[in-house]
Length: 424
Image (tube, rainbow, N blue to C red; front, side, top):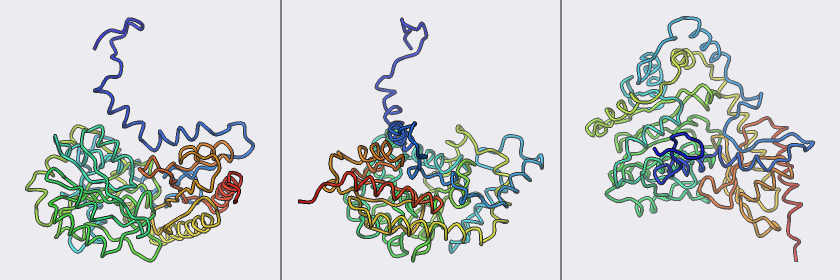
């Protein structure tokens, strides 16, 4: 590194080599929401209502089960979980997660199929990093979770985007998947239940995805961080049930179903009935990469078996009912608001995508402009769709208490009425 004549410190200025990190960081949801938040009038009389992030814990209605909190206390007080953990995870936690995931599968995962990570984000980091070979590419959904784009950019792995079709419940456009894939394609990512779309895939559609991936000779990375958060007509079905057709890497965490995103406990599960991933030594690559990264906190790992075993089903049903009611409210209010349309009622996760009709809104340039003006005038935060690859759309989070959500949606409606173009 060259010395800086101004400061005297040997710190290099940003270069082409550092550009991917700067560019990747600017694409994150946190970075985009930071730009929107900067538009808020801090001196305004009304509280800021945040419908932009995927963290429901700010709402008192979305608390973790007491059994999970008790499990953490027990793990801490046991004195057994104060040291370093094995890099791939504590044995009892890996076994418990294998059993948990196997409940929904026609076969049994073993502890050796499970690798623990610091949240689902690290699981994504691991998989993108080990797949990033020179010249390779990966197929990502559009719209999708932007961490995938950030990680591929930083790892110099080419991303190619296949469309999700709004009018078909945000199903994957499998014709575009086939058109995008080539001999250098290493994997296809699906997110189900969907962030950001709020969709839940049917058994038939998942089967078609599996058959398409087999035809192309690529693996599937199934992001199931919102597993079982399905409250519509379609149940959650894990991609791993098709592991006899195509190798599936499932990434997930306890963050969303147990409402503890800050606990940072995630996993990678290899669903590899035909041994294709093991033959390609993907398991060894995962373990090697995890050996040079951080582990989840040991006491969280130690608590996992008790968290899974002791949480009562009525807790999960309560959360699903809260999400179903708030999704109904959100969808209904959007339908009442001129200038915004929602092509598909959310059936899962905590989000809905809504399209802006800028022809109805006077002086609004694009989705970022809409969100920044909404923040300034109404103290309401929503995420611009351009952060998710969908220009002139917005993502709304509905995981909050009903009065607050209704207040926020009424403010959005007032904003759109105030900026409505006069009809000729």
